[in-house]
Length: 278
Image (cartoon, rainbow, N blue to C red; front, side):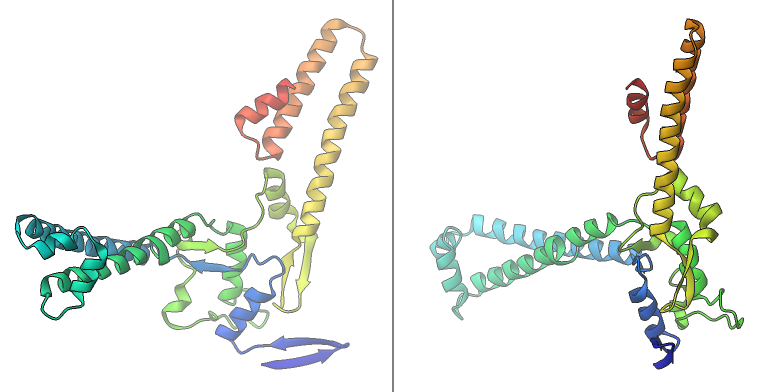
């Protein structure tokens, strides 16, 4: 790590690799660079292994139950009804029967806990609910990761070996802090006007589009458009006396309002109809 002091500001520099990548993710103001692999294939295989293990344990338990049903041993019958008797007999050296069943019960308990609680089903459900990174964020992150935006032309991935391809499969990537839901107007501003909202990130050493500035611009445009449609409708209807012309104007402004809601927001079709009807 190096420190450059310039104009009273301290900027840390890290060696290329895990240190620089971790610093880049941590220094991201909006945390949109917290992108990691989900490992869907490995997670699915892990679940399948645990599931098959439980199937085998279940079959073993069913076998013991069938044996106990046919056995006339009164101790075994009592152990089937009382946990305390079962635990006491399982601790005796001469009661191999109960000891084997206790070992099986502990295996089932541990595997079930691993399958349902600790890391498998619950965590897999949580991971699957995480969003994919946006294409814009992923493209920018990939460019930085592979050094495509370096001014010195030294293009090399931040990580070596197989980890150099960790961002290749976008369907297997998750964003721990995805960008806020964006409407079509926001996407348009990011895509075509983003250059006007760029800021410099000293920690990362690269430019980025300020989400705050874009949000303010989109809000201003939306408010101006809504106010323009409303004021335009009021003024136009006030100055026009012909009934037929007024009807056409009402229809036109209603269509314009519906189109603006549909194109500039994430409103669903029922919401667009409701807004137009109101």
